[in-house]
Amino acid sequence: MELPEIEKLSNQMDLMLSEKEITSISFNGDKFLNLSTDEFANRIKLQTIVKVFYRGKIVIITLTNDELIIISTGMGADVLYFDAVDRIKPGKANINLLLKDGSGFTIRFWWFGKFHLIKSLEFAELKFAPDPFSKIFTYNYLRTKIRESNTTVKAFLLNQKIISGIGNMYVHDILFKAQLHPQKKLNALTEKDIENLYFSVKFVLESARKKGAFQYDLDFFGQHGEFTINDFAVGYKEGLPCPECENIIIKIKTGSNSGYICPNCQTL
Ligand SMILES: [Zn+2]
Image (cartoon, rainbow, N blue to C red; front, top):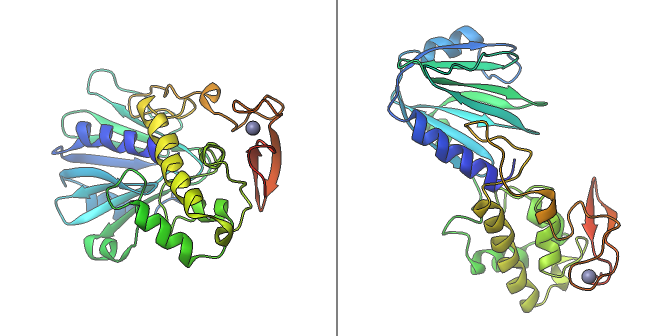
């Protein structure tokens, strides 16, 4: 999940869970917890959920006892609401949280994830970089960070300490739209390149946000997003023509992951 998926999920969770009291929680497995299952359950029991919000790729639930539940979906997770009438069976869920009104939610991590309970003081010490939907992600912020860094443009965009919420899915189209090769060094970027990059980041993530996020991820109500593979310009389009120049899109190695580029539009 990247920014559009996390934002949607956290908004839906906030809408459905705020001001509700937690009755119980049960776990299937515990490697995603930072506490023992008993301690976790005892500390959140009878607490009321104040609100749900996100920072970067993390969903945060605040409780009346001044503690916070932090959810990191890792490689992906199904975080699903159930209401009192239409109870979803927990099935293979790792977490099953029940609220006083009979509703609740389950979480199944696809691969790994985190479900931690921390105190607000510990949370205050966590540093989150601005995400592209936030007001503090300005052109000047991006420009300053680019001029302070000395890496490739792709590694820069994926660095969660600088920009929160971009992963190795939307990044292909962000780079294509800015007409930048993923391995271009930051010190080779012109002022115009930085301007293009700023607008590309906003444009690509906003496009996914408007379509209700990516199709493979389920939202809190079990619905798929409407941003499909077809909506990518070059991402996952290896062997197909570039929408700008009709050259064939190729897949390349970019460090430890892969990239999709038009070798004509995105040169080193
Ligand atoms: Zn092209």
